[in-house]
Length: 535
Image 1 (cartoon, one colour):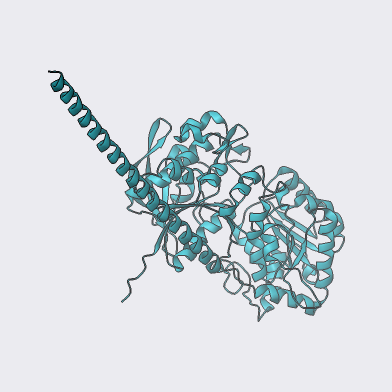
Image 2: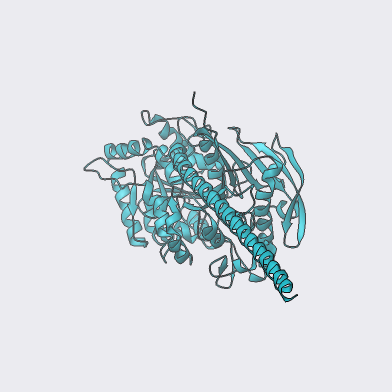
């Protein structure tokens, strides 16, 4: 009988994990991808910070390691590590150091980032690797995500690379959003404990300062992004945020893998938040959900027969709210309803609040994060707006497809990869897409969508096309697994090669020392003979 293959051991480092702590899509990925990887045969564990205000109340949190010693510059600071399990059984280790992680927010207040984010996430990255021997988990692959764990690949390469424990461990780094890179003042570099020559143009130095994401890019064995399109875009000046040259240099190890959707959480057939469940084969419940949404946000029921547009987003330039601001007044003139949920930049919060006051029977703006309302918008809206300037992957357009809520998106990143434009003549496509980032292009896409909405059969076709799409995590997990195995195999070959070279160097050294010893012996013999001859 063939020996059963041992599962690949994968350690994932995230700065946020749903449902324990969340600011955005990164936490959703952290809560879903490890489960999908477990289902395809990986032994996955997660490490995250212990954000006291978010985690302490969760049932089942237990102490795993007391007084884990973690270096930070010349100091060694102790952490306690707790563990809890996701619903699927995946273990999540939480690194507790209250001075760093007992905060009201994860990364900063509405006024700006925390002043000590460098220390917080340098410490976290060191703790990720210090933890493994203590919990007897020796990973084949360490997978770090975004800048907050960007030093993990650098530590593996420069501090632990010659340690036998880590010699065959491959490092993977995923860029979820290249706009956030972890940039800090150069004088903080000694706190990393990394070799001095790593603060250089070929290392983590970036325009005179420190860049965590650059450190990961140059050190990781494999780099991934969250959609194929985005992996190409970030190698250009328009999207690369200054790192396009570094990424071009490292493009041979750069891959794009589309994020998946967690249909256990986002499916109209089972969603507990919505007024009525429905499916592609029975859409009756969607009208009930639309009526429920209108009542929830206090818009008139007469909009039941008009297009209802929804958006759930951070209110920022990246998300295309400047385009929405440019067309908002004439969009409302088309007698539509608009529901927006989110928080963000003051200028957009003020603009949208003013619009809601001017059009109280057409525009509802909810300046908050509300998971329940987010589900109601996905189910109750007819169309979903994502006119993003850039979008590494995006998840709401994928959720919208499953809910029969037709996306209107800009063709960038994951929006381009997931939303095929509707072609009425062929009955193909799942949404409406525009490419040029300007108000006129956005407006044309809106008008095309509103026109098709009035054609009931065509609209039903586009809804059902989208609802039949499958972006589950399984296919993405299989792509990650293939990369893990490739990276680990490469690391094993590298370890064997280095061990062979070391053995050969040792043997050569032994031969050289032996030859030197023979030469000394011969020299002494000759001197003795010379003395004898003289006498």
